[in-house]
Image 1: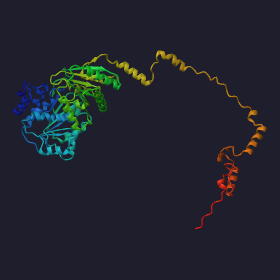
Image 2: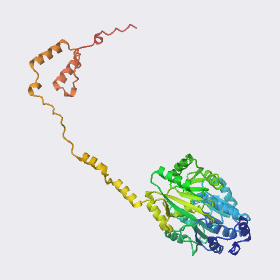
Image 3: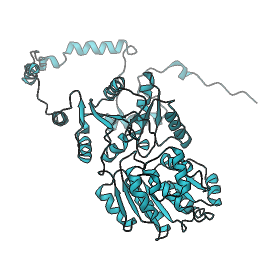
Image 4: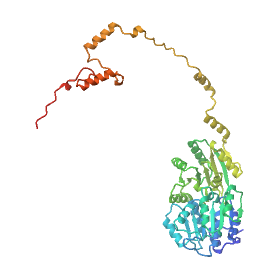
Length: 495
């Protein structure tokens, strides 16, 4: 089968032939005729099978008739990430080089003023992320009443719980008579039920089993412990042992792990770059361009790079973290083995990743082989639970020490202090006379003891206050009065 039998226009066929494509893929051959018939389409196919061209080529044929009006685009394509939106724009520029169509790209990280100028001229094709699209609508710069075709790419991600409210708002702004196209590599049953809200009698085009992986990708598992430095060592071991490693994408689940892993690989002499959602748009696009051109060998990235990015010559994919959602695994390893090429995907598995790995094997319906010894997940889980509850069995060499520690301690052999007898406690008459003579002879050498006022009898306190009121010296601190207190005050000088 060739593209000439699909009903595409002469201008589109000329652009496809110039791009070097002769035969359509299975998803293209199944979806393009239904799109040209103005039917709703639900397309499901593996990554790297040309789903973008499945709606780009027929849309160019349909847009040859008619013209766009200011602030009222004729078609709308929604993408979950900025990179995917920019990639779709590149496809329209490549296949629509013989058309005089205005293509507008509305994504975050770009000035509103530049995007407003493109919309004001009239856009035949509007490619946008949901958030930036709604920002333009709320500012009164965009009207969606003239949209004829709505395309939701990566439908399972777009219809995720976080995107459903935005999709519903956008669909209410578009005419009910629109044509809706859904394309994705995975379509879980719960997501399929949601598509019934947006599609009317769709033509389902499924060229491969849902959530299946490509046969061109060799998949392997590598065991590692939960410590971060052990996982990084396991990754370096995989990088050193990988055959025909040209370039690779290393996927992490968290952004902070991307920074840590990037610095670690850089210290070990690897040519590495980083990509995640917190980077500004200019830096992200520059990093992707350097990776495409081969200036960067390893790209440490989040799931931003897992969906739809068309980098056909990626030789390896490494999952530093097992993806939490099993569908993301299919998209990650789909970055390699594209366009009929061979690829390899390695996943580092820790004892805590048992449920995630089981979900992946259940979704893909295949068992992934291990490199070396597999992790005994049950034993690791039991050890973790026993350590958490503090019920770990004592080792044999520590039994004797535990018994000694548990044995009762012997009573102290220290002799008790002898109790004072009444005779020793009572002072003798000679001791009293000696103390009285010493106090009389040298009262200044004896340091007086401070007494608390609260403990003095009331009669003694009142007598002291009486002496102070008469101007008599206070004897609370002893009978000695310093000499400087007895001096006469100096007479005042006559003015």
